Amino acid sequence: MFKKMLIANRGEIAVRVIRACREMGIQTVAIYSDVDRDALHVRFADEAYHCGPPPARESYLVGERVLELARKSGADAIHPGYGFLAENGDFADQCEAAGIRFVGPSGDVMRKMGDKVTARQTMQKAGVPIVPGTTEALSDAEATAYAKQIGLPVMVKASAGGGGKGMRLVRKQEELAQAIARARSEAKASFGDDSLYVEKFVEEPRHIEIQVLADTHGNTIHLGERECSIQRRHQKVVEEAPGNGITPDLRERMGKAAVAAAEAVGYVGAGTCEFLVDRNDDFFFLEMNTRVQVEHAITEAVTGVDIVKAMIRACAGDDLGIRQEEVKLTGHAIEARIYAEDPDKDFAPSPGEVIVYRPPDGIGIRVDSGVYQGAKVTVYYDPMVAKLIAWGADRQEAIDRLKRSLSEYVVKGIKTSIPFHQKVMRHPVFVKGRYDTGFIEEHMAGGKGGDERMEGDEEIERAAYMLAAIAAYRRDKARAAKAASATHVEGGENPWKSAGRRSQMRGGLR
Ligand code: MV4
Image (cartoon, rainbow, N blue to C red; front, top):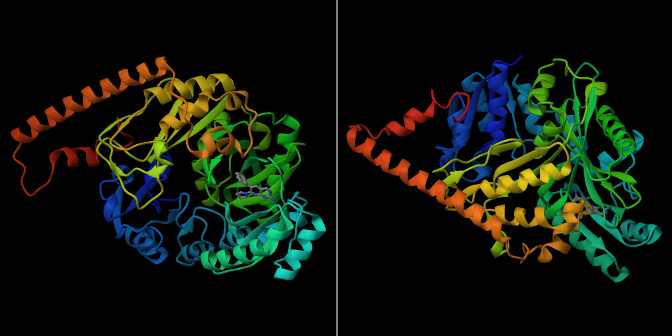
C-alpha cells in the first residue's frame, strides 16, 4: 500500500480523499494556491505545499509543479480527484515515469476514452450499444451525407469534446451546414482538434450512469446506476440512486455493458459509464469518465462500498476485495449539489466569505463540504461548495430527509442553490420520479430557478435554524474577542488558527 499520497485537488473532493487516506494509514500532502492557504483541505492534510497563483492553469493544472511537489514531499502516489488533472493521460504517464503512482487508469486508457470517436469504435467492438451514428471522424461533406442518410434530428459532436462541450443539435436540413461549421470551429478553438462525428438524436433521454470498479487481478464489477438527468447547462444539480423505474433486468444489462466497456480497455480503478436511456428503455453508451465523480457518494450510500478507498486499493495493486455477487443495493439516496450561486439571478456566481455556516446532520444525512464558517469562496474554481446526501429506506424517505436537511442548512454571506433544491424536492414531476434531461428547462421556469414561493412552515423552520446559527456565531465572536485581548499575540501568529490547524483537526472537525 502507499505510504504518502499527494492530493492534486482542493475543496470537498480533496477532503474526501484525505479522509480515505487517513482511514487507510496513508500520510497526506495537500497543495494550495495563493487563495487557498486557509482552505479546508489544507487543514485536513498532514502537510501542505504552495502550488502557485489563484488561476488553476497557473497552479492546480500545472502537472510539472504538482509532480515536483510530490517528489519533494516523498509522496509515492497522486490522487487527482475530479477536474483539474484527473483525465489528463499525459500527466498520468509523467507520474508513472517519475515512479509515482497515479490513482486512476493508465494514460492510454484515458486517451482512448477521451477521444469520443475512438471510444465509440472500442465500445462497438466490445459489444456495448452505442448511439446510432458514425465511428469515424468526418469531413463536412461526409457529415452532411451521413445526417441525410440516418435522418434528422442528429447531433454533431466534437470527438475531443464530452460533457456537452462542442455539440450541436440539428432538427432542420437548412441548419445542418452551419451546425457542422460552428461545431468544427468551436472544437478547434476549445480542444485544438476539430474532428467531428454524427449521432442520431435521442429524444427525451435520461442520463443514467453505471459505477464500475476494476483491479489488476481481473476483478471488474459494477455498483449499479445513478440517475443524473437533473442538469442545468450540462451541470448536474441533483442525482439519485437507484434510478427511477430501472428494473433489475435493465440494471443487470447496463451493468454488464459497463463492465465489458471497462474490460475492453484494461481499466483499473473507479470509472463511470454514461448512458442515454430512451423512452423504450433502450440504452446507449455516451462516454466513460475515467475518474471518481462528484456523485459517487450516493452509490456509497446504497451499496456500503467506499469507492475512494476501493480505487486507491486497486491502483496500489491490491485485490478489490469485493465480488459482484456481494454487491447489494439497499434503500435510496439523493444528492443535492450546493453551489455558491444565486438562483434568483440566473445562477450568477456568489463569491464571498461564508459568515455563518451550519450544515445539517442527523439520521440519514451526509454532508461533504469544502468550506467552513469563515472560509472565503472565490471565483477562481468550481462554485460547488458542498454536497448534501440523504439516504432513506425508500425514495420517499430520502426525499423527506433531503427536504428536512435543506431546511436545517444555514449558509450566510454567500447565496447558494439551497432554495432551488427545495423547489425541486417539492415539484410533483420530481416527486413522481418521472423526469428526463429536460426537467429544469421545462419545469423550473425555463431554467431560471422557479418562481413559486416557499411553503409557510418550511420558511418558519428555516428562519428558526438561521436565528440559532447566527446567535451561535455572535457568541463565538464575542468569546474570540475576549480570548484575543487576554492573550499576547507575538509575531502575527493567531492562536485560534494554529490551535485549529493540526492536532485538533486531525481526523475531522469535531
Ligand atoms: C445526446 C443527446 C441526445 N442524443 N446525444 C449532453 C452532454 C453529453 N454528455 C451528451 N449530451 C447529450 N447527448 C444524442 N445522440 C442529449 C444530450 C443531452 C444531455 C445528456 C445527458 C444529460 C443532460 C443532457 C441535456 C441535454 C442534452
